[in-house]
Length: 151
Image (cartoon, rainbow, N blue to C red):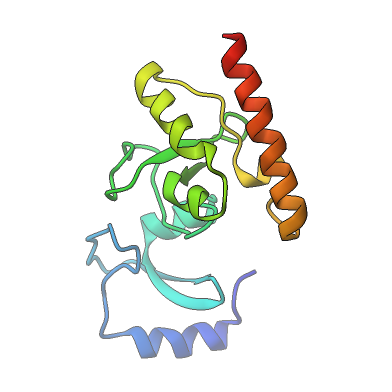
């Protein structure tokens, strides 16, 4: 949902002197700026980062923006690409959320160039309560272990 135009104008005036993209790994200082809401706060982005954000190209958890051309580790962190929706998620964010298989999946990706990984949205635990999420993680870990044993 986009904020109202009045709210955007107020934010633009407040951020007017900033003139640097909010994306911490973007160094753009150009004049094409757009305001987006991220985690309940309005922020100023360059046009390229705003477009990536609009397309959902950000970590499911921390909302770090990526562009498709970015390589794994471009921001100093490892990423996993979802085999279903092709969105990328930080390995450490998955680990913090309790998905312990993320580290070994990334190691497998580095070794083989591919891995079967499902992001929180595709595995269906994006909005689950903690108990259901734990059960889902345990089930996915067991499923992953069985898959690894069969190969």
